Length: 310
Figure 1 (cartoon, rainbow, N blue to C red):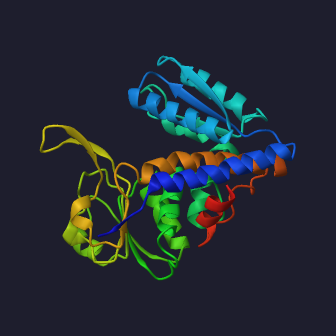
Figure 2 (spheres, rainbow, N blue to C red; figure 1 turned 30 degrees about the vertical axis):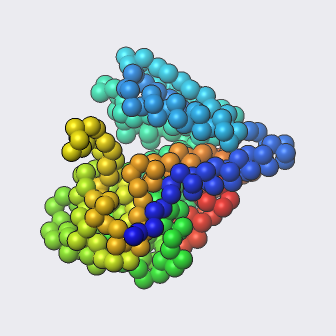
């Protein structure tokens, strides 16, 4: 049987370290880290996610400020709010929940957030720094993936890793982080030929395709480590809805370790958001608005630093 990588437990450990960092900042006379979440419109899933983020902030001592804007908010007004927040010294992290209404240019909005306060790691400056190994705030889910992997893998050097899915949010940044950990990385996508054969060679499989139970048991070699980023609601054989990942979980018990769905990657995303907010707050207050203050340049120890020092 594969070992189950308990994302909830690892997220709690990271939250404890994040809270300790906040306490140390307050004791040192620094401003309490502040995270602003902007929600435009009434998207149900976004509202649930925002509530979870606010609750998580309260647990670790981060000031959480919410801006709920009507769906007909103009792009100009939204950009003006972000500009104001960029200049606010008590705001260290800014997160604009997507999807945004159709009349708003999402890419323009995300680019308008100061890279120093872009705790989601989506700004082109942070994306570029990550891809070139020169620092930057690391996107939350990819950072969480690496922390989960590090919980069961002592040495990444030379391991074969396959990332299934090439999204800008997960697939590409995870691939960059695995490369920085000295893995040999293959990124696959919908047009990849021979995906099962490619996966069978992997020591590490990160499934982030958004395709329920895509990865079958015979795709996985014994002893591989599987991180399942996907989450989809499907109808079970009993006629009830259930959540499944991109991996056929029951078929892959010959793996060394695997993340469950739910309870694997999901809890890590919010925990890493909080860790990023504290790192941004510390950097902004220590160095001011310098362009070199983000996380250390990615390396084999980068995600370890985020887990232990955030």
